[in-house]
Image (cartoon, rainbow, N blue to C red; front, side):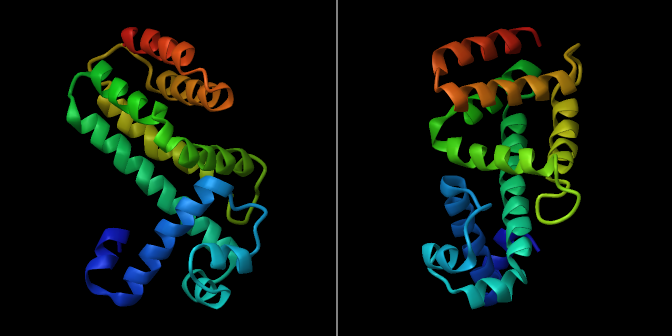
Length: 185
């Protein structure tokens, strides 16, 4: 059941969905890797017992927050790509969303999960990076249909540009590079 569906009919599902939203907001601001359940629960207006009830364990909670974050990213890319059929315009809409400072905390959380998953052989971080690529790449392939642009290269370039932007805050320089990339599509 999708998070939005859970809110409509099932009170437990609605509470779980609300917790996921709060946990994502907290995670985007503070990360999840070093926090224990008690302070995390307090920060999101819950209790460790309730978090364990809904997510089974801290690992389960981390996995679910990452899934929720990926669903949000997929929703955003789908919306950006649906708004304009022209490949360059679709990628521009996506870049504008990614470059918006209002989204930087969730993107930092994304990169935390991505980096941790590169070392994880199990646990909550395992497979996060590969799943992210598997979710984004088909959408870019579809958006870039009819273009000579390489979807893997565009995905890698957008992520690299975003990392640069998050690290330096140099919006003007990085956005100029993004514009050059988009013009090449």
